[in-house]
Image (cartoon, rainbow, N blue to C red; front, side, top):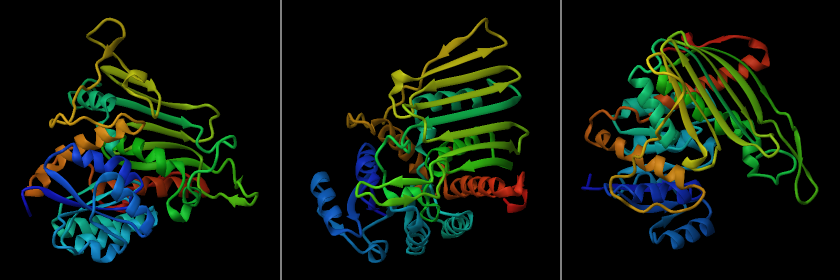
Length: 370
């Protein structure tokens, strides 16, 4: 491998908007090539980003000798094939979330990654946003004492009938759609980051609006979820709930509450807002009254100026994750960076939630193995 990690990105949607600027904020990486199955999309992205090396054939792309890292930013149903092919070609892999359509596919990806000896990570970059970094530090330092209960609730209006349609794959379960995957997966991962794995799940996962009208008047049948409520029994004994809805008229809010024997932590603010929209509040048995906790001020150490747009928060968070991932390319641990094992653990919870909602009640995850 050269002095810099040479990156090839498959998929030029989120890959162009968030991943390229995040990689460019960390000088140890160099984005050298883009790939998309649609020639016009990769040409447009390449022109905008100043990347001349472009491809429409992902199979040959992942085997190139001049690429060290393949970033998979394609539709979810392509992740397993592309990730495994890249790993088998000896590449390090970064995979967007949701990691796979099913737990079985996520398990295949996990096993291939761990057998390969290559560095692998999943884009659960929300672990690294300013508020969650602050919470992560508090929990790691024992602020809660014995943790009792966690609650995360996220609501948006993305699928409310008053809003236009998003990309149609998002409305299909078999293509990796739905907001349990889209928003809830970040929250499940953060709970795992703080408290360890989930032991059992009971859930209701619903498609509240099963039909949408396209601009041409035709009807889109929807089978992916827009609303879900999960009750989680964590392996460490914690009880947690994760509620997600994309049909809240005018909604754009995420709330988090953590309770423990020594302390409590809460946040509330906009899902897509900036730091000014969110405040971390806490109480502790050794302090009088509620107090505010400062958000993390960590920025990419390069000092690179990040784009000022709606995705700026995601770019910053991903850049910090990419910094922390660097030791993995030398075979060293990269604590806190979510791997394909973490992606599998989240997908196992998602699949269990769907089984529970279909009538299985409490679904025990212990039988799924380490």
